[in-house]
Length: 263
Image (cartoon, rainbow, N blue to C red; front, side):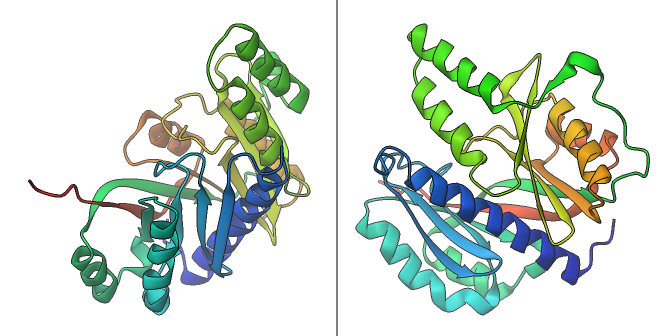
């Protein structure tokens, strides 16, 4: 598809609104046990931090653009004060040499790529395939508790993240009956955009089961949204399966990480 800049701005604003609502809800759980913090740069850009999880998956800057070049210094200083090396994200639609030069000057390199896929929900969206999908936060909670009971790490964290995923007003959680929360999706609707986001903050974009996204698209169609979108690692199994659902690449994200120091 050839996505317009106006559509891309709408997608980024919807994604930012969902991310912000999720972070706010997560910060309110257990006296902010994860050390959640954020800086909203504008409607389509957000720097998020989890002091309790100092890894890139939890600490990244979304929506970096040339007109936000002046934000790089204070944002990186904010992370440095917390002892965290963040991941920075740029998108192909806003590619600018001055941003690339600045990030390279600071020692960052492109460590990976994601794609944001979008499409108009079909008038007759495919069904949920019977028991393939369960839309219930209670089932997610039960799964997290079972992990705790079995002594599996991060059960409580998964439970908190799933609660936070539903913190945005109007969010709906979709769980696969086969893959569990690893493939869980949250449908968040804002201003005609249906954003199908991973339910947890940890990376799950490579999960090949897209049945939850299929169910979310069906509900988005019933809700009358104009566009639905979802993200995947570039050329991953999830990417290919999302294309099979009728979504096309709207833009590519470059993930910038700090290059290791040479001895």
